[in-house]
Length: 348
Image 1 (cartoon, one colour):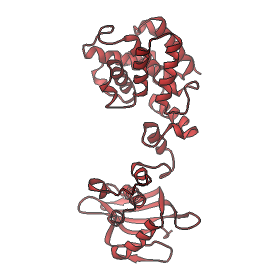
Image 2 (cartoon, one colour; image 1 turned 135 degrees about the vertical axis):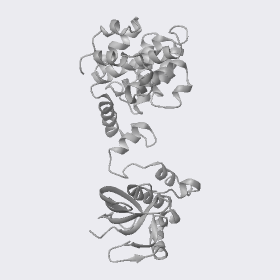
Image 3 (cartoon, helix red, strand yellow; image 1 turned 135 degrees about the horizontal axis):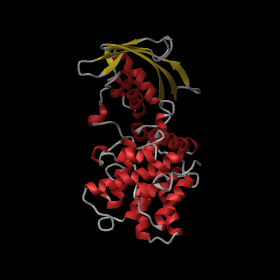
Image 4 (cartoon, one colour; image 1 turned 120 degrees about the vertical axis):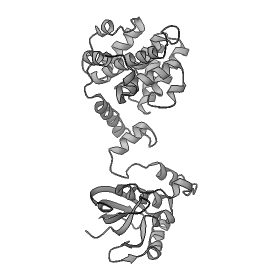
């Protein structure tokens, strides 16, 4: 691990100086990389500033020790010691709770720290919890995403960054979360923040999205209302919607992605024109349980026309996956949605 930030930060940043806060500070400095530790301390400083802006006073309106420990240990789940089998926020909350129990902290305060750490990526939830939980999330969000940075006192951010450099925090932290998730995918279930980060770094379609999860639930739900006929607002979204509608078994959704006289090649040498001819071929894919993954290869767009190519893997149509490179011509419709004019997975 890298060297901790200077303990003089306690004096220069007027950090709460107790045995518990010193212990948490030193523990985090030894257990986590410098960019994580710097971020954690800055998050407290920003959280305290937000408290002052709200007219909140330490010791009266909130427990300053709890707030400090929550911030300084909020990413302890990214340490070697804190790397369990749960999402990093929950692993971190459990690790922090164990640290506090070893020091005789009462369970009520431990519960506040646990909530603050477990919920620190839960926008819209943490803010409705106890004051310490809400303040910790606010300070962390300021340091990561710049949320409410305009409300900080003039010069505070520059001062704290001079003492505790960022070290490309946002990307370094993302890499730390991703490294854990790649090694232990169970730490990044699809509908969590770590899961979304992992999905962005895997081949397209390798991790299910929300609609794929619904299709796999086994209850037979089909799209209705606004979800049933979403427009592809960009050429790239046509492929995304195609895979979703195919997984959902939604033939009308699939057909909505083709112009009435579109050209479709379902198998090499088979050329279909018009949605009436295309419908049976798409229905055959649905009935056979076909699934498609697409990895974007290239795109050329000129006004309302786009030439798109994807690396495609089609399963469920035979004993082996069908791998191809697609050639697709898309056209923007009067309603703004993009659809196929030509869809040929085998042209190349």
